[in-house]
Image (tube, rainbow, N blue to C red; front, side, top):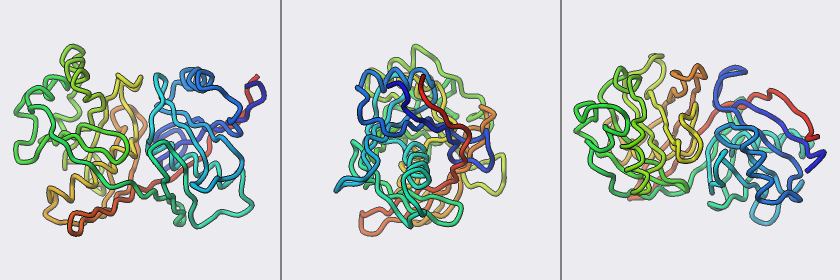
Length: 289
């Protein structure tokens, strides 16, 4: 473990010290699982990633992702942030695309000017709990949940409970009720992603927040995996009266880490195309002592 290099980058941001922080450990193939978990807990970001080799295998660049509490098969900002580090630290020139080999499967990432885009897996839609139960976990009233659209569990590799809310004021008012949240966790609804059409910045299309204390992430400033689920949900349910979207989502505002996530998605005969994009900005680098 001693001497292992790492970088810290901010993802889904317009400038440094915004967006979602990520620690990326390079040449981490010799680290044990418990060592990776300890380092993720030490960094205490939403996630930390570990690049297992300095070259790709036949499925892509092998990478593992950890929250401060557990390993996860897929996450959005770690996918983009780690791809940026690979392109800048292991390759002589920036590629047009590269692929990460994650537990959830190979995830392609495309470089487009200042943005990076990941293509997410086909979504799985599952029933969610009653709106009143979800509202209680968020410290809201049932009337704060939009009755015209479903509360639904959606996964493109990592499941999220998607909750449409009626107003920006309600989203900003939300606070976790521990007892009600624990009851949702017992039903395996550990990550709650809630959103509305009203935004702080009128150039954005959606305002969102994400609570996942069961993963050691009380609130996440930018959640690429959840936004991929959101993109699929938006087109499936014609939230904007269309089967195609090209918009930006603001997240992290309430945390003082404003984030901007770009979503492109469409549905054709039940097959989805889902892309989530954003910028990556380097912040720091170092070695373990």
